[in-house]
Picture 1 (spheres, rainbow, N blue to C red):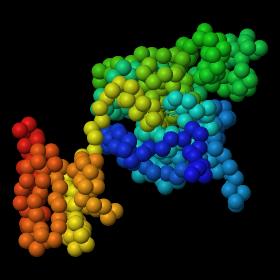
Picture 2: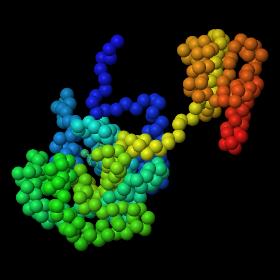
Picture 3: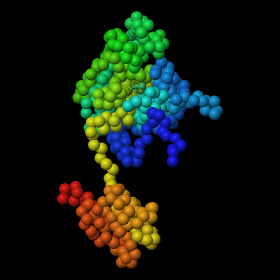
Picture 4: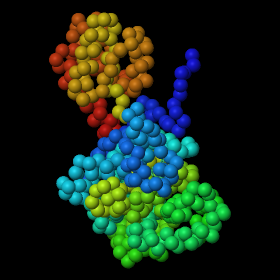
Length: 433
Ligand code: ATP
Ligand code: MG
C-alpha cells in the first residue's frame, strides 16, 4: 500500500521512542530558567505579518526571504512565527505586563517556521527555547542572561561550546559605523550579491551576516563595529565583560558578530561549536533596547536569547552525552480469560493511582505474546492472573530480572503489598545489592 503523503520537506517528526530526549533537555531548561526567575510565556504560532516585518526588521534575511506568509479567508496577512522574541514582546505589551513592575522575565519553547534550504541543522520547522527580559539597561543583566545559557549547557554536560560576544552599539554610534561600512562595501559593488547591494543603503551591517562565500571574504576586512562605539556603549560592553569575568564565564570577543535580526543593540552573543558542521551556532542573543518602542510601547530596554533545540540535541548526540532512558514499566499484569481481564484492569488502575507505571493486556493476546510484550517494555515485575489466582485471592509477583517470586493478595492489601515489594527492589538496586 502506498502512503498518500509524507512529511513536508524540512520538517521532522519526534517519535515516541525518541521523545524522552527532548523532554530531558526541556526539563533542564525549564528548571534552569526558573532558578533565574523566568516564567513561561506561550503565544500563538501565527501573528499579523506586520509584527515580524516591524519587529524582526525589513532588512533581515528572515523577513526578506524566509517567512511563511499567507492571506486568510478574511483577507488578513498572517505569518507563521519565524522566531519567538516578537510574539513574546507583543504579548507582554498587549496585556500591560510591563506596567506591573520591572524587570519582567519570560521563557518560552516555540516551534519556528522559515523557508530556508533544508540541510543538517537547518530546517523549515524547528524549535527554540528562549529567555526574554524586559526593563533593564544594566550590563549585569546581559551577563546574567549569558550565564543562564551557559548553565544550561553545563547542566547538559555539553563541552567545547564557545561563547563569542560583541557590541553592535546603539543607533547613535551606528550612524558613524554605517557610513564607514557604506564607504568600504561601496568599493565592491560589482562583487556583492544582489541582496547585499540592496542592504548597502538600507542596513549595511546586514552584509556582515551574509552567507555567500564571496561576500564573507570581502566582509573580512570591513571596519570593525567595536572601533565606532560611543562612550556609553563602550562602557556598557566593558561592564558586561567584567561581570562575565566575575562569574568565571569564558568568552572571546568577535567583532564580526552582528546577528540576523534587526532589533539588536549593544551586546550580541553566540554560542558556537565545531561538532555539528556548518550550522554551528546553537544559541544566539543579545540586547534589543529599541524593540518595545518599535512595537508601539514605551522605551523599555530589553534582552534575550534563543537556542535551537535540534542543533542542541544534535550536538549532544555527537558528543555521546547519555540521556537517561525513561523509567520502565513497574508492573505488567497478564490476565488469562475474561474475568481475569476485568480484575487486571482494576488492579493496574490502583497501581497507577499510587503513581507507578503499570500495564495490562489491551489487545487480547495469549500468555506468551503478553510476556514477550512485558519484556519489550522492560517491565520490572509481572503477575499472571488466571481463574485459580482469582479463586484463591492471591497471585505471584515475579521480579523479571532476578526471577524471584513473591506472593501477593488480590484484595485491598494489593497496592500496599506491591509497593513494599517494589520499594524493596528499588532500594536494593540503589544499594547495589
Ligand atoms: P543562522 O545564522 O544559523 O541562520 P540565525 O541567526 O538565523 O541562525 P536566530 O534567528 O538567532 O538564528 O535563531 C536562534 C537559533 O535558532 C540559532 O542559533 C539556531 O540554533 C536556531 N535556528 C535558526 N534557524 C534555524 C533553522 N532553520 N533550523 C534549525 N535551527 C535554526
Ligand atoms: Mg538564519
